[in-house]
Length: 596
Image (cartoon, rainbow, N blue to C red; front, side):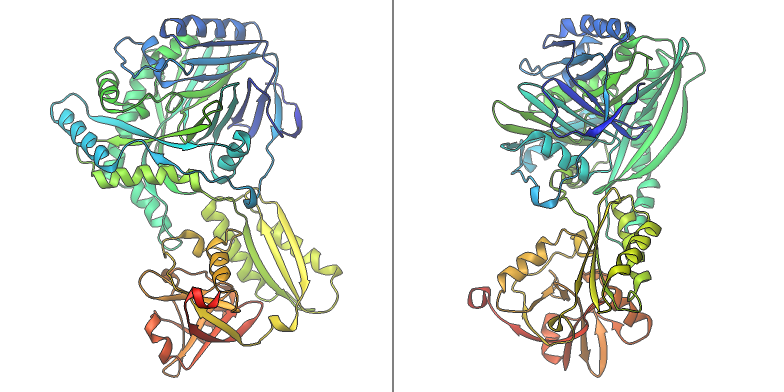
């Protein structure tokens, strides 16, 4: 493949394709097609794919997609809900491509959509019951049942795509810009990858099956292990692996089908996902590959043909790009195609957006758990843009608690899969102070998901050091399950909202849904109670402050749940952080209406 690096891609043109090359960790931009091959008719799908093959054989690149509803072209027993308005196949034929970088966007440009499910929870439950009756009859073993989320869309599709990609740790992202449609895919799943040597090609498939929501800082890794060792999820994953082994067996060289990875658990911002890898050697051409593999077994169920009939009966609308595939072929006969999940389809004419979500239903599936899993998968749509944040105290002699700050930064970077080089961050911090005047400074460090750092410095003022604070007790609780309470990031919406409600106060004291005190908007809580010093445990829903850690390690304070009603029993109350250290707080219970 040709590798030509260009500047940031600001705005893709119509009939262009932007694709993530997973192996080389780069973005490919295909623009100005010499020809567009597309159809909405099943009978034209295979002839069109043969034309794609001919162009690739002549030295061109082909980039585009197949919709789920293209499946009957490869097997007449595959039943789907027809959709005449959306292409079954679309490929642009390109003479070349550019390697580009994607611009980073900040949280101020966040696009929030009002997503509404296409079916109710009651309707979902009825569909699951029907699926289980078919399983009992022996018509299927697993059905990948899905529904759609829909919203009005008035924003720029490219900016929305950048938002999805920046929020996700995906490997197979794609953006397709058509005249009437835009496709924004943040897919983490590989449908197939082809690597060729002479006349023989290696095909690699990496199906995903098995999902568990991410946990909080304390139990997150435990949940990953729980997914890895789950008999139910292993059984579902193995069922799909066996189907793909069978699909590959139709085109594979004898004895070449292998499973090099089984039950691998991958980390994503909102969930843990189980994947396996299946591969083979083949001499099949493109059309033979599609006929053997499409649609991917991970998004139908088992067995494929009878299960697709059940899907067509129970799902209320066509899937279109959802669970189809997006990718590219090269003149070197290499290829990469994703499974189009975590994918938003935007109708430019109707100004609407659609997002498909679903899960594999088996006999022992629990309806509530499956619906919750769908909601977990949809969290990608609301994942805010943010950077990691640390605020440090620098005195002319040193950074206060620098190691603690860097350790916390590393912990958050690991949790959110940010690419952070802690040694480089330390060097940047140390170089920054070389030009500062010999006065105490507040140093604010921001780190992007790609490891880009920004540092701001300011001389500390008297009102930031040691003065007592007038504090309001919040009227409403925070949710202790909110992961952003446990990490210091630029996503500080909950704190901004609270402070906005109490403008006449210096600070706000927060509490959770159980009535337990948690922290202040800009610091941890320490109270004197029965002649002892206490701070709430992290599980209440609060940041692991560096000065809090410092005091705990030295035995100055102890962890203890402190309830709202115990405030009156506290002889003293303090806000603590690594910049102010300890500021006495005078807390008042008040209403928002009277004090904002």
